[in-house]
Image (cartoon, rainbow, N blue to C red; front, side, top):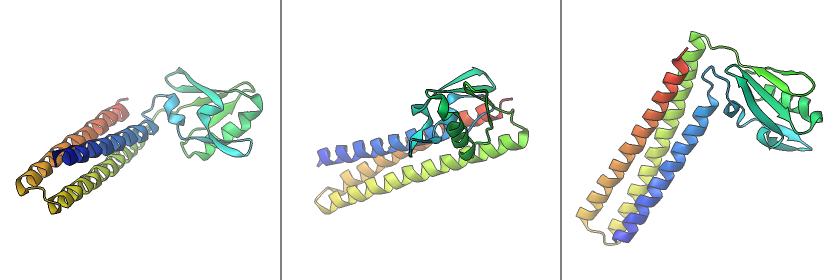
Amino acid sequence: MTEELEMIFDEFKSSNGKTLIHLENELTKIRAGKASPAMLNGVMIEYYGSMTPIQQVANINTSDARTILVQPWEKNMLSEIAKGIINSNLGLNPQNNGEQLIISVPPLNEERRRDLVKKAKAEAEHAKVGVRNNRKDAIDMIKDLKNDGLSEDMAKTAEEEVQKITNGAIKKVDDLVEIKEKDIMTV
């Protein structure tokens, strides 16, 4: 029976890990006033009839804290890449100089910073819901084991361990968002 419990714990930790990775990815998309190539993650470009991530059609760099440079591997893709960036609703306006796209990242005003903090906290709430759903699944599996003959004490101990893992994952979510909030609010 303890093998099954270990398997449940491992699966639960793995699910929480995936939730935290997803949260980190979503938080990198929220800009903090500084230019970063990660801001363009998730931008899709129409490349010969199929939607392709921007990283697969161009090289993305930052020249300074406020400028992103997008160097396409094929010059004829400049307008498609610009269209993809504009359509991604990131609020960025690329300038085409014939060789590459230059994206100036505007400084954030106080109101926009507060909006971004709200967005980060909303992402954190989604992650917490994910962790709680994972907890529910783990507890349901423990209850199934209990019906198959797992002792009452072992089931209670296992549920306490699941709650301990949940508390740790929720704390990591809070820590990630706190770091992002400080990053956003720093002028």
